[in-house]
Structure formats: C-alpha cells, structure tokens
Length: 446
Image (cartoon, rainbow, N blue to C red):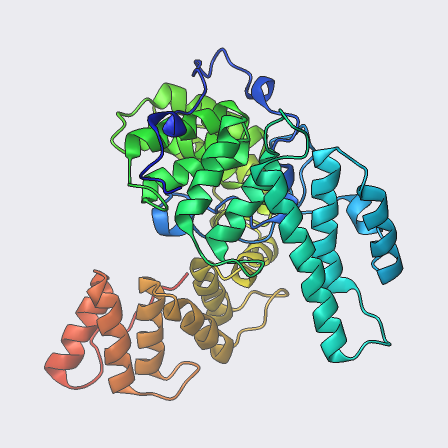
C-alpha cells in the first residue's frame, strides 16, 4: 500500500493536542514507548538549527526503559548478560515457541540479530558460519514482520515496537531489505496510531522532508506536536525550534517554545543534548526577551550538555575559560581541555581554537608548536571554517608550520574570501595587486 493511496485517516495523528502548560507528556507514553531504540538507528539527529539533511541522519542508539520516552545509549543489563552460543539459541527458541507475549517475542528477535554477530563456533567453516548467521537473521526478520503486520494474538493490534523497527529497516535498507521509504512511512504511521513516541517523531520528519510521502509542513507539525506530547525528547526539541523561530510556516510562539525547550532539556541524554545548548544560548544573550539573562546558569547548562559529549557546548566552554566569560575564571588548562574534547568530536571551531593555543603556547600547560598550529588549522579549514581557511592562508604566506607558498596562501585566502571573510579578502587583494607579501601581517586565530 503506497503512502499516496492511504486514506485521510492514515494521516490523522490520532491524538487530541493539549496545551503544553497543562499536559504532562509522560501521561501519554505507551507501555512500549521507544523500546525499539535499542534495536535500531537512533531517531534522527538534529543540529542546533535543524535542517532536513541533518534530521535524516542516524546512528546506533541504546535501549530505553519500557515506560520512558527518553533515548539512551547503553545496552540493557539483561541483554548484555545473555550468552551467545548455539546451544543457548536453541534453548531460547524452544522456550519462545509457546510464549504469546509480543514484547518477549520481539526481544527474542532482537537477540537473534545480536547472536548473528556474536555466535562463533570454532568447529564451523567460514561457509557454515555464514549460513548459520544468515539463518538467524532470516528467522529474526520473519518474526519481526509477523509482529509488525498481524501480531500474535487474534484481535490484538500489531506490536508497535516491531512496526517502528521494521520501518527503520526499510528506511536504511538493513537486514537485507531494500530501501523503501514509502513502506517505512506507512509503518511509522501505523505505530504512531498506537502512540509510539519515536515512530510519531519519524512520521513528522517524513512529512517535513517528503520521505515516503508528499512534503506537508502542516501535517509534520501536527505529528511533531503529538510526539512532544507523548514525551519524545527529540519531538519536544524540534517543536520548540519550530515555535521559537517560526519554522515550517508556523508563526513564532516563543512562550510555548520555552516550555517545550525546558522539558526537552530536563530529559536530555547523550542522544538528545541539544535543548540544553539552545537554552544556554538564550540565557547567555543579554537582549533575549523570553528568558532572564544569566551567564552562570548558561554555563551550567553548557556544562551539562558538554558532559553528554555535545561538541558545540564543549567548544563554548573552552571559549569561556579562555576569555573569562560566563562567570568562568580565565583558565588555560580547562579551556584547552574542553577545546580538545570538542576537537576530538570533529568540531571545526574547536580545532581552530587549538591551532591558536599551539601558536602561542600556554605556560606550564601546552608547549608552543608551529607545526601543531598548522595541522589543527588545516583540519578545521578542510571542514570549510572560514576563519581556519584564512589562518591556513596566513600560515602558508608566512611559513608558519609549513613551507612558505604564496600560491597556496592565495588559494586558502580565496576560499575564506568566498565566504565573506573580510581579512582574507584584504590579504588576497594585496597579494594579487603587489605580487608579494601582504601589507597586513596580523593574523587572529584565537
């Protein structure tokens, strides 16, 4: 059944929306809320200002408590404690034959997928091992399809977690299935009808970006609102951004946006730290009219997000401890530590900051190194950071950490200038007009 041929009821959120000030999202969480997150790619990632290309990205995630809408990154202790041997697989299979509980059957299907990766019998040849692995995956997929489409007990609906997981498989082409966004969307919709928080969020994303269905912002917002009201952290954050900045053709409603943003921040975890960072930005801004200006509180929010390994917050703390802002003391050691953490996560601005630290050094903390300064700036420049492109151009022009090369300097200045970097434009103009060294020898990379 295609998304285009579904009835209007298939697109209905199936939920009566309540004011966020009056509704506790956890009241609407189903008993199976997002339990499938352990078994599938995480429910989309979203940058500070979400865009469709970022929203559709995903990565493996951990198991949630069955009653919790929050997404976690750690395997459940129960799942970790299960042995992975052929003997246990056979024993587990026999035990599940007479078990009508769909949640138990779904857990068994997930175990089979893990077992396909972990069971290693030294007596098997490579061909036998591959055949056994394929058989486990086939059995798992067969059970998941049954749970997602017909259920186990007559008169009972299909199992929402299985629908969500199978939708992910069609969305990413995993378990040997072809990529089929239309079938994925249909399964997300069906799981959403049973108030599955993560499936509701995915349904919203599909409507926003036009994956498996026609792009429809209005319908997407309805599903984002439902996901938020079901307690989905990602849904809360996304709805807050929509209302805060007037996205998806929705007029801004900053008062309601802050309510959802605070709720998302309260539920922040390693998969969903974004609300903490966004809330910190608002509290840091003196001219913000919707929350009080409080730099110390902003620092605490950044710290919470940074401890959840959110690179933009780690970078912001590095800047604060370098300059003494956000009620932080000037502390090179702490600044370098946070910048290093963010850089290790691939944050281009943090990589440029480390270039600045290596360029100057820090007494008793970091030894000055032109070579390291150039290497860190080059990493950031390769990510398209305009200031880093300018810095690499300057390093090439003056021979800092690399051989002096005017043509190379021109190329990097041109890249930065194309992004509107004023000093790069000035250096590029001087080099082209004089054919020699730029008149401006100052370079600011910190």
